Image 1 (cartoon, rainbow, N blue to C red):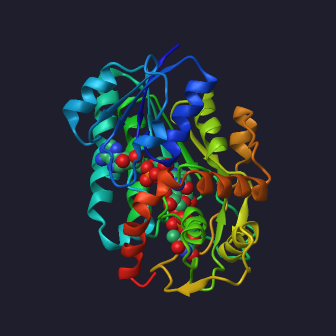
Image 2 (cartoon, protein in one colour; image 1 turned 30 degrees about the vertical axis):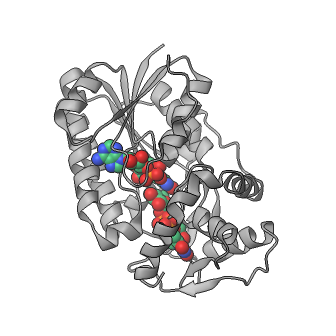
Length: 332
Ligand code: NAD
Ligand code: DAU
């Protein structure tokens, strides 16, 4: 049994991962989270206090980080500024958290010789053309597009350098687009579901031809736990579930599942520098770790996600108006 320090555990994927670990293992968990706008303490409600604790703090605060890393057997690093649109309006928090925060954690795990897993994104590879038969592999060169993805790429490179230069025992994972419960309503799928529930029309950027490769957050959590248990230090693992769909198709499916006309949405201003397509080839990860996605029926996963948002209005409604007001300011 081990004690895990999980950064960003009050966010979307981090909170799913905390529940996954407490359910599937005997580990105890401390979450370090700054509780930014993206966090929600309610996502961690009801967890066993004998096995779980929350520390509110910044991953770029070396004093707080050193104490917590010193008490942990392993660190799983989810904390990040995670939303591309926000990175276009104000890149600084992305530099602070994704770069300086990751650097601060790396220095602490180096001092304490602590196992480290860095959670990253497929966006570090840039984008693919729609008709390109290629998908991203572990060998694809980094070519990030946005302030968000460039700071995530930088954080990956810091981890690799700390492995090679200082012998830090770290693994990395680059995952595709997650969906599921507890995702902030700024993101595509929850934004459209809650727009319908809230009585406003869904918003599609541009023509909606952009392709994302969807994976359920529960499958991502299982993959990260498997990497923590069986991953080889220094290795990068690509995590995906063969879930490529264009945004228009996803939006029309949401509208149909919610009993609406499939054309009942607005086209809004496109995202600047909008990546066209992401696609993960997860063959090597599956072969090496024996991990397989379980939520492979996207429509069933989407229906369950619609039901979750319909049944948890108290979780998302308090932040909905402010999120939509921010989008309205930029015509989205
Ligand atoms: P999120 O925005 O929902 O949650 C991020 C969490 O980090 C929040 O709880 C926030 O309060 C916390 N945080 C931010 N800055 C912090 C700081 N300085 N110190 C401590 N905590 C801080 O993000 P998410 O979607 O759950 O993503 C989690 C991780 O997974 C990120 O590293 C992201 O790059 C990566 N990732 C996300 C996806 C996706 O589809 N959402 C896919 C692949 C990888
Ligand atoms: O690929 C992994 C990445 O997936 C993660 O690293 C990021 O943290 C995560 O936010 C996500 O990035 P995207 O930019 O792909 O996700 P987002 O939900 O913002 O948008 C998904 C697609 O939907 C994208 O093509 C933009 C489009 N979109 C988004 C919003 C919010 C719309 O058409 N309308 C919208 O209202």
